[in-house]
Length: 251
Image 1 (cartoon, rainbow, N blue to C red):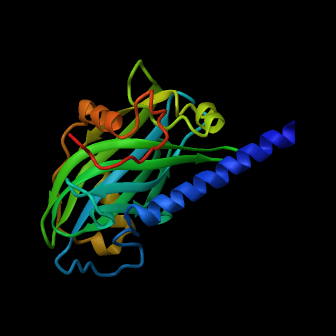
Image 2 (image 1 turned 90 degrees about the vertical axis):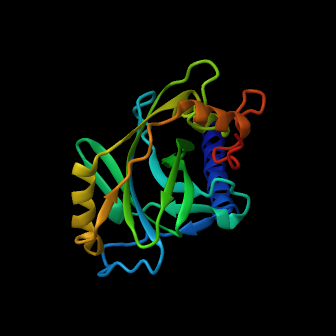
């Protein structure tokens, strides 16, 4: 009986890894961070650099704290793979302290308008693997040759009320239930934390040390917009929330 439970969890872990791989390779263009600790000179070559920090916490089931894997950015009318951009987090931009873990994103984008859709997070142990989506759903516009800080997004998982969007899908049942991802929702705060974030960026990444960084913080989190996106992307109770990432926004 014990082996059966372990085997089921291992299969769930492998299944999640496969789904993540298929999503990252098939539905969006995958990017590394635009600069790293070894980048000596910032050369945007007509592109733009967007800086955003992320934090996530599980208040509903504190023993199962997720890590942020990928941030999702897309054009407002995204239809093709090239319209969707997945930025993988890295250890160089991960800052841990007594206040929690911050993820310092450095996203290089072509000039234009975008929707910062959210971030996929995962809790993973030997026998449990669960995913959730930290929603953001904020509009930004970037100009060529600029470096712009758009704020810090903090997501806290709490008990889900009737009809509220879920933090994560319900499948695989055991993993999503044990971690509380399926029974919780996100409270999200978007704030200007340049006083803390910008010194971290400049200290960790030499290419940003002397960069002219504009500050254009995203608007406050729009919960109604997040709910509408979730409802229209397979998130209804009837649909069973089979996917975390969903499709493009249809408002």
